[in-house]
Image 1: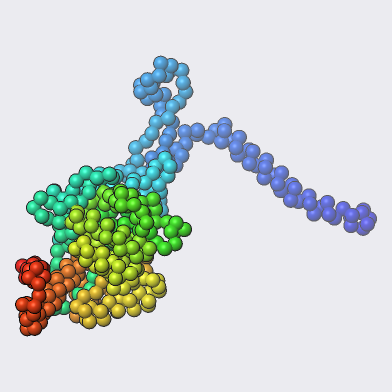
Image 2 (image 1 turned 30 degrees about the vertical axis):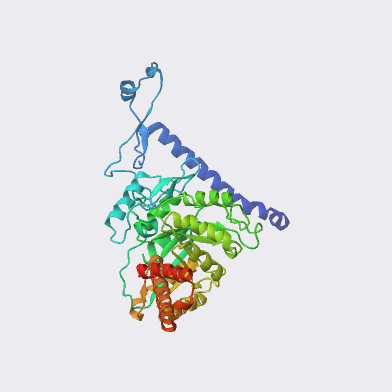
Length: 441
């Protein structure tokens, strides 16, 4: 054969060897399969998974099958019990794994699980800080949305019955803190309940879902509670606190109806606080109406400090309500350093005035900074008190100051002695005003 022909046939010779090798392998595999089919054992036990299935004997099917034509069907399936295991387990899945909520399997709403309710009841009974469960007998009457607070027949007021007891040192600088906006974010609300000291009060938005359940949780952890009344801001209705907002120019009947709805949303709160309301709190007439209603029901009022203090104080003095206005808002700036500075300002005010009251909102940063700040507060010489205690202290101090001023004025008048120059009716009137101050002391 000539070299030219061999040169052109070289590529074909290169492909021939692999081709023959493949054909040989296929023939060998076919021979093996045929041998197994003709001479092999068909009863091969395949690997079996725990909790798996395998064909059941026809006799077992005929014995247990309740279908009328059970004998006409082929092999059935029977389920095997796990061998050496009490239950089937999935590799890589924790034993405490909870399946995510779905439309078919929704997560239970807070308070809807009886087991959860029993657990919280047990916690309430075992926690030494827990406050009495609400409502307390004799302190409610039916309202538009639930029970309304009232003064009991024996004179017990909700502002005292639902307050956290406090027996601190009257000579030590005292600080109280309220965190508002509770219930709007369940994660932050639960963190505040669990992580903040029980002396820190929590105020809940009136529109909170499952409001009574949240209040019960807070009281079970020892926190006294307020409820927030939405009040008209200056930029209303662009900034709308909701359909039950108290309006500065609203009628007494309409504002009374809206306030009754707020008060009947839940029970167990010692006082009411404002939600927004810069414009409303600037109206002394509107504030006086609200304070009159609250005082008649034995409920205190705490203002967050974002308003005209003089107007609020004048309306409170006119109705004799137990009230307080916060000295500082803690989280107008949400940076941790800014919140710490406001907390330090409360310490300075407590030294200067004997007590200080701060308010914040349900921001994660607010809860975290208050929690960390309170840890060593007593070591620095301060005492943390519930707001109700600071309100009662300030009310007592104001009464004693008023009596001292009245006594000083009476002594000065006696020293001057113009009694014989005054009209007898005027003198009697002044004596009549002096008597209540003396008896009150």
